[in-house]
Image (cartoon, rainbow, N blue to C red; front, side, top):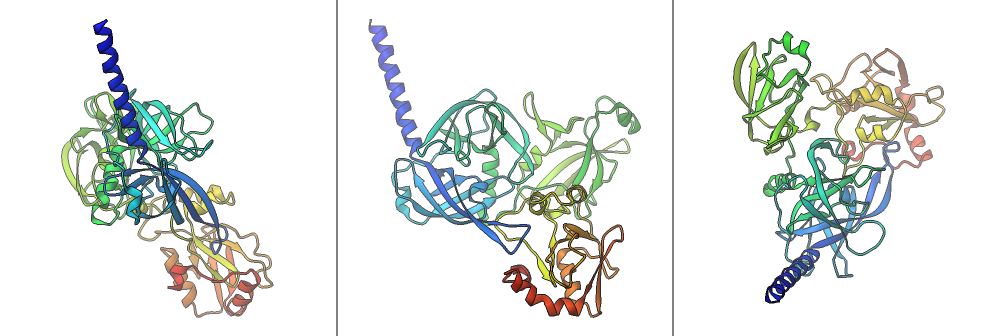
Length: 480
């Protein structure tokens, strides 16, 4: 009987401590109310207002950790603590749209009174139990769901379209959970970011390792981002390909196909090199590395561990000779892609010339339409070059008496202006503005032409803008 009572007393104490710990954690869970200004990429002078909610966690430094997509394009933010009805005005302190992470601040110090910040934990193990907190659809109060870590590997982040390490969990995750913490032993191991629709409880977390990278990156007050090597590689699993490069069974890695013109590796490695290791971690023939015993993910994992400006060490095989080289990480994906990753917190760039609407091709624009998607999607897979850093499209033609017969030109990529190529939207705009002749001739890559009478276009410009209720004929960056 004494043994039974002792066990009962100890069990009650542990249970009571668990309840106290849980209550302390709950105090740090935040509901986020967002009003956002969503750009219209088909009508880049327009936008709409939307309201949404998400979740977040109070961490050290009186900061709130959440997703970037919870606060993307925000114009007004409010936050509300668990167990309280008062809302406080918040602002974005820093944001990484790449990693879908953001930090918020609240000027009113009363918001943080009596709250113990939640600490960051370590990258969890597969099968480790986690608790997901947040404010998902289906109610207004705090929700908690329990699950386990199913797998850890690189996944495409829906918010940015870039691939980073992610934690898959089987805990129920729904709209509104975004930005909320996944806890293990009372510490944050990940931040809820996305789910696979029509799946059986497949949700994904931004792992705590990505959170630490983001917070360390922001210590100097400037976000530098996650680096990209700027090289195109292919797997070496094919036997014929391996024989062609005279590789024995002990050599594994990735074949370097192309190096982007502005890559930091341009004068360090060459096409045809075999990339065999990164920071002394062996790269397998399928492009993966072991980041823990018996656990593999993309070799970019060890690139993502570095901050911008760090040096990365690469082992390569060149003409059967082993070499070790170093490169300084300087660029993100947007520095080397022909079409930038999905953009937020900015309005689209455009200008109107006599009713002809021009814009740089962006992934936001691609996602907004199905017009000419096959051709334009090809540009989205290409790297920038010295001669072509951006694609310019004729977005649409506003109907008027001077544009009759040209209404079929929509999402039309332009290669030349008056027989000359250009490298960017800014250069194209300057050439349009400085042209001195009578006719502006635009061409696509197949030679199809569109002709604009310069004087006629300028004479009709204001009339066309007024007719379509357009306040400005160009985006704010060009007005400046």
